[in-house]
Every structure is written in structure tokens, then in C-alpha cells.
Length: 106
Image (cartoon, rainbow, N blue to C red; front, side, top):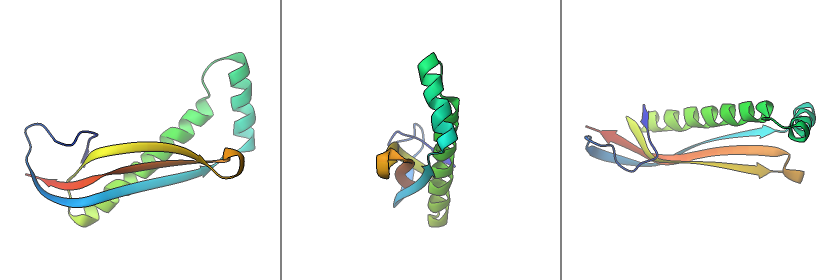
């Protein structure tokens, strides 16, 4: 399925709008991952464990959004927006949410 952050697809006409679709993924923070990320922050470098969680969350939320669009009969999702939020006590959880507009392209 074609997904894009833009509201149009160059060279393609939108024949039908199905409405807003979304996908969410929520992950709890792992204490070992937190400790490792803290050490990486002290010595420099990238926090690969967190990067993997963000990527996995984004991919899972994208899959859910696409499934919702397919159920509506769409063949594309336009205007996709990706948001990241920390939730829970002391920001112990991470939420990734995607929203977009399900459409049928000719």
C-alpha cells in the first residue's frame, strides 16, 4: 500500500476518501535497556536499544494503520503523521501513533 506524508500523489487522482485511519504501539521501558542507554549517554554514541524500540513501534503502528485502510477498501494512505509520546509514571512507556487519510487512487 502506498503511504505518504503529502496530501496528494503526483500523477494520481484520488477517486474516493474513506476517512482517517490510525495505528498505535505502546512499549514499556525495560530497566536493562534504560541502564544501557544511560551508559551510552555518558560515554557518547547512539542509544541503539532505544532506536530499535522506536523503529519497531513505528513499523507496528504503520502495519496497523495499513490494515485499517485495507479493510475500508483503500489502496493508499495520504497525509501520514507520526507522533511519539512518553506515557505513564516517570515516562516509563513509549507510544508511537500514526494517523492518515485512507483513499482510493485511480
